Amino acid sequence: MADSEPCFVALGSNVGDRLRHLSRAVLALRKLEGLRLVSTSSLYSTKAQYVSDQPAFLNAVVALELSEQRLADLQGFLADLKRIEDELGRRPGLRRGPRVIDLDVVAVGQRSLDIAQGQYPLQVPHALMHERDFVLVPMAEICQTWRHPTLPGSPTLTECLRLRSGVSGPEGASLEAWPVQMLPSAGGLLGREGQLWRRDEKTLIMGILNITPDSFSDGGDNFNTENAVRAAAEMVAAGAHVLDVGGESTRPGAAEVPVEEEVRRVVPVIQGIREAGLDVTISIDTRKADVAKAAIEAGADWINDVSGGEFASSMLSVAAEFMAPIILMHMKGTPQTMNSLASYGAVVTEVGHYLVSRRAAAEAAGVPRWNILLDPGIGFAKDMQHNLCLLRQLSELKAQLQPSPLLVGASRKRFVGTILEEPEAKRRTFGNAATTAIAVAGGADVVRVHEVKEMLQTALVCDQVYRGPSDRARL
Image (cartoon, rainbow, N blue to C red):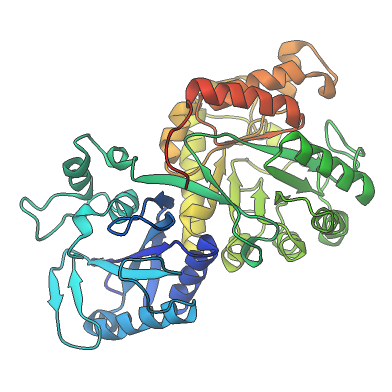
């Protein structure tokens, strides 16, 4: 592989289930011979340029490592891209108009190419690349060192954005390209397009649904399917955006649950939620790849892995295969050993480095960056001072983890009870509200909570204070 010359391909869609189209395109690229998918950007929602009377686009950029044979036959590569577009349903239409999928080669290393011969003409860098925020912003996220070889002064992508916006950094183009996440609607790639979530404006509420007899605060409350589905409906009515369904307690000292038993607990609940018609994103809270796979096949959308994808060697492969968003959490050891491992030199830095390394591992396994969320693991292999330090310096941690969304789960944790002198976990609601407010102020994108209604109210007020209302056009 010629790793010195990455090939950058821009992806875009503004027709139908846009995320599904982009996800299927990435899967198809990964199957091509003679290349390796190196990295993907986050998702961005962008206003249509040139022909403005059309829906907003969902955009991303991927970096590919091409073999020498591929680099010598770029016409063949372009033919493969055209075939993928055709297979995904793109048809001839208005130039620069709506499209199911668009795959454009925008750069090949630092090369300047203008190939007019052949069935597929190619000009790289793309002739209009420097004026397209939907290319510049996501590409700048994954390759800050690339320089435009044909513009005066060979500007970096960041400098191209400065020229367009008049302010510093990729954020300067934020009026034209917004980082977003897609909340699937009932069934991931197999369902209709979900709701776009603009990450700098709204905190998502993840409701906790434990299907366990021994969780630390609510063990046994929902240990049968009927009660669990009823509780799910109540949380959705209260405003939950995501339900986190778990069949194994990960409290300190908890015993491991066999795969078969964990599947037996969670799958009927997930099926029941879907059969009840609840329009909500479902996350499966598990360390086990077989459980995650069974849950997704039953209707779950996300994977929430407290082991950061390390407990089961095939977990990241499952996330890649199903194009499922995955939450990677920091924890040392296992629930049986983690309390004895709560030792750090600099907890924020160490947690940040670990999560960045796990994100890299997920990307190497084929998980797009837009499907990765990170969680510092409040209460997991951390004492009270570690937890407080992470919350106090959450904005610093978020800066280390950019551009990934950040999830914080401090609800009912022991350190909250210690501060409140409240041994009963279910009576820590005001303390939970405080940690929720602190998390939102620190930049958390998702908060994992037990009391959905109360924490939604807390987050709504904090969002208005720290993020403010938006007058931007509908995504």
